[in-house]
Length: 430
Image (cartoon, rainbow, N blue to C red; front, side, top):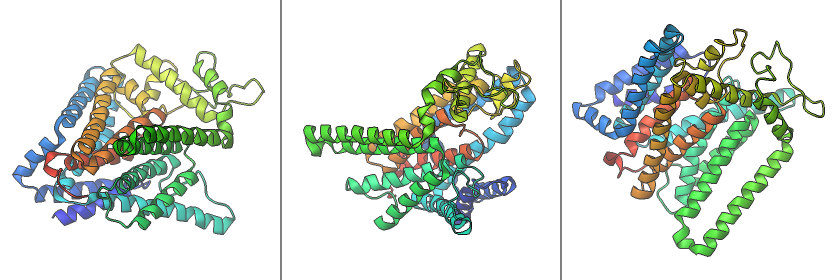
């Protein structure tokens, strides 16, 4: 039964990102859960609880808060309860699946990487086929996942696994992945090309954060061997490289050149109402007559509007992926929007300050557990957990990734990594 659960789990990991597969996802998840549950012993359940530790308590507290808030405080109780059933419950089941799978299967990092790499190869191949067929590359459109956000989310996770593997190889540790270096380098190149073709600006920012974190950790890890002068020189080189990349990105993307002025206009949500209904109100104009850049304007205005909603109702309006829109319509019935393009704003508006504190404590606790596991006990899975948790927290500031299949994939990986960073698995090989 473990082999069946393993196969169904990997199939689910691939299918999760495909649009129009909700029924198939549910079938695969329930099948995998059932197969793994039958394979677990009674003692395994105690091990599972011990492996999850404090994160499980925080998730339990957050779940209880969501339920109590939906019943007692939500503006639309039935809608909030439906969202809990459709959004939070599948995420909890994904967490459970990850925990159970990690107890019964080993060497999951390589299998997960290969699943993500297959998706990257299909996406890049689709773009190349479009070039052969139409004479131009397919950019900012990803038919495989239905959107560039979803594809960049997968690619950022793939790059996290690859980065940890390269880090281990560069520092003389056992590699995370059971793949030859040439294969790892090829998949890394594939993921970077896929990210560029997807064209998700926030995904590129995530890659920059990942690269900065990896190089900084390398310098920190090797500081004893490098000595103070070489460590300082390496730190200066990192700063110079990041400054150069930032400058090149600024010059190559015209959207950055109007960002400051766009941000100032977007922050003044009382004078401009395009963010409420883009069809009813025209976009504001810059000083030179050009219109504000829509993406930056919308995101910043949503953050300001969401922060105001949180301040007005600190206990939240009721859990939901589109809680921002539901709350805003209490004041502006003509609002035509969905989520806030920021997971933290969505969560704060829906779940209130308690949800923000509990979720922030969970992500911070996961990152700290990963850091301590890697640098304190030399468990390479700890570095994966650190990067995945920190990356998800950062991406939530820029995109609403804490919903739908993206939240489920994250929780699934968290479940796996919690077991792999527990004392029971400290000695396991990647």
